[in-house]
Length: 255
Length: 327
Image (cartoon, rainbow over all chains, first blue to last red; front, side, top):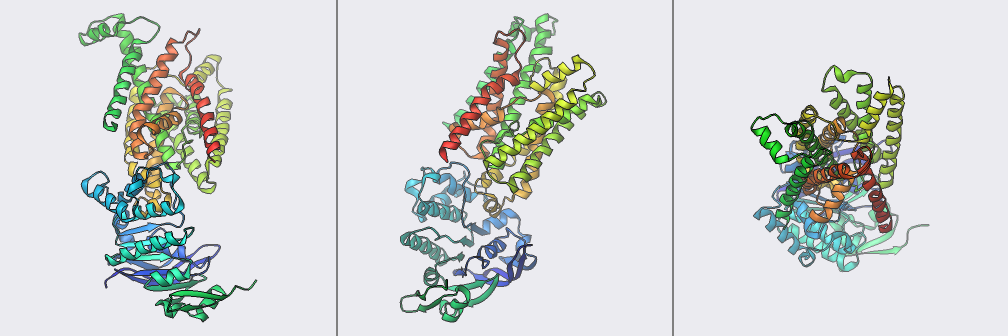
C-alpha cells in the first residue's frame, strides 16, 4: 500500500493549551484510520493540521510525496477532502447545490465531468431522491449524508472526517461508517475521529488513541483497546471483546 | 428560464435608462436630441441631453450596479443577508473622508483625491467590520457594529459640516450627503468609472470563493479557497465600488441590502450567481428610483437617497422581523 499522507512530529501550541504534541502518522491508500480519545485530547486539532487548515509550529505533513505547503490551495483541495465536526451552511441551498460545492477545487461544476461526479456522489450516498430539497430542512442524518456526498463529489484521495457519527442514531452511524469503508475499498485513505469505541473498533483498520495532545497508543484495535490504555485515557474499567468487536464498559467513571 | 432571466434584467435596465433620459422638468424629445447630437447640430434639446440627462442616467446606472454588486459581495463575505454598505456604516465612513477632502479644499488640487478618500474610507470600514465580526460572530453583533460605526462617522461628518465656511457650502455638502445623481456631468462619470470597473472585476473574480465560504471558513479553505487569499480582493473590490459611488453621488442607502435579497428568490442564493444578477438589479432599482424622484410633485426635487431610504427602511424592518420569527 502506498502512503498518501505522512505527518511527522507535529506540534501546535496556543497560549491556552498544548493542542498537538509530537504526533506522527502515516496513512496509506485503502485504509481507514480511527482517531479516538477523550474530549480535548486533540483529535480535531490533529485533523486540522493534516488538512493544512492550521500550520504546525514544528513538524511536517507530506501529501502525495510533496510537502503540504508546496501544493497550491486548489491542488490540495482536489487531493484532500475535509469534513468538519459541525458542518455549516449559511445560505438556503438545495441538496444538489451543496454537493456541487464539492467540485469547486476542480472548477468544473457545469461541465460533463463535474455533473457526472456530482450525480455519482449523490447516488453513492443515496441522497439523489431528495436532490432538489432544501438542505436546511433535512434531518441530522440526511444532512450528514449530503455532506459526505459533497466530500465525495470532489473525488479526493484522502478523506479527513471529524466525528461523522456524532448525533446520529445507530442505523445512520452504520450507514456513514460503511460508506467510509467502501471509500477505502476503492483505494482512498480515510482518517476519521470517533467517540464511540465500538464503532472505531468495528470499522477502522488502525486506531490512534490520543490523550492531552499526545499519542498514547497506535496500532490494531486489539493493541490499542486494552483495559490498561482505556483506563488511562478515559478513566473507565472496560475491555474489548474480540468475538463481538465490542468495547464493554464494566464500571462507570468515578464521580 | 435562468439563462433568459439575466438578459431580461439587463433589458429592463436599458428600458429604465431610456426612461431616465426622457424624465426631467424640461420636455425633451430624446430621439430628435439624439439626432441633433449625431448630426452635430446645436439645439437646446441636445445640450440638455448631453450635459444633464446622459451623465445623470449613466451615474444612476453605474451607482446602482456598484452598490448592488457590493451588497451581494458583502453578504457573501460576511455570510449575512443583512450586510450592506450603508447599514454597516461603510458608505458613511467613505462620506466622512470625502467630506474631509471637500472641507479642506483638497479636491480642487487633484480630481482623484475625492474618490480616493471615499475609497479609503470604505476599505477602512470593511476591514474594521471584518475584524469585529471575527471576534463577535452573529447577525446582531454585525448590526450593532454597523450601527456604532454609522453613529460615529455620521457625527464626525456633522462635526466637520458645522465648521462649513458659509451656509451655501453647508447646504451643498448636506444635499450631497443625502445622495443624488442630479446636476452631475460627464467628468463625474469618468471619475467613478475606472474605480467601479476595477472593483467589479475584483468582486466577480471572487465568485467561487464566496460560494465556498457558504460552507464556513474552514471548509472553504479545505476546498482551496482560504479566506486570507480573498479577503483583500473583496475589501478592495467593495471599497472601489462604494467609494466611487459615494464620491460622485453621496450616500444612496439600502440598494445593497434590497437588491441581493429580492434577487435571491429569482436566481437562488448562490453568491457567485448573485454577484452577476445584483449589478443589473441595483442599476434597475436606482434608475427607477431616480425616474420616480423626478415625477413626484414636490416643490424641490426629492433627493434620490431619501427615496431609497423610504423604501429601504421598512424593508429592513421586515427582514429583521422575518429573521426573528425564524429563530
